[in-house]
Figure 1 (spheres, rainbow, N blue to C red):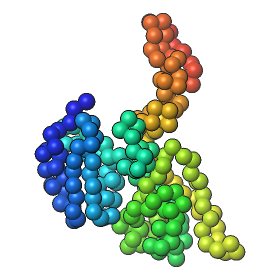
Figure 2: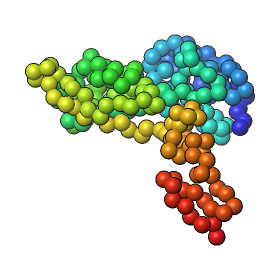
Figure 3: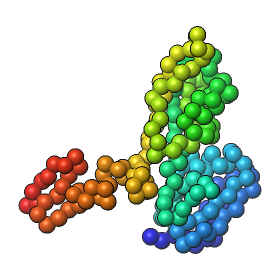
Figure 4: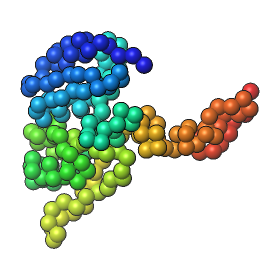
Length: 197
């Protein structure tokens, strides 16, 4: 509903001590374009998903050539875990290839990179959460491979009808007007109704 002035936003980004060149400028009254010159800064800024600047929440959205100021991007950074991944697959090229199955890999966590937690590998990936993704992937060769479980951590809700984060299609008032509160009843999710006392 409101945003800090552009100088406050620029000062906030200066306080992050980014390693490369960046620029911050207004796209419109509600959107600020943040352009970063290197992948390390990009991963660091995008991985947070949101920041608070002068008590105002700033949500970070992925810009694409199809970015529309009236819609929110369904592309978000998600940590994907590969539990019990065989140790010889804890290799940057293999982990990058695993991440690519789901989207654009950004980074591995420190424990994965240093192999200090061999029970699970974690990769941060730009994932389009409006699409379905496999829960298992084939790892290794055709003859000696196996099905590897992939677990998504903290997937935010996204409505493909409204094109916004914060609710799913099953909870959408526009798709399901019967969910809205009326004088006589409150309609609840999944169609059950409760009388308003």
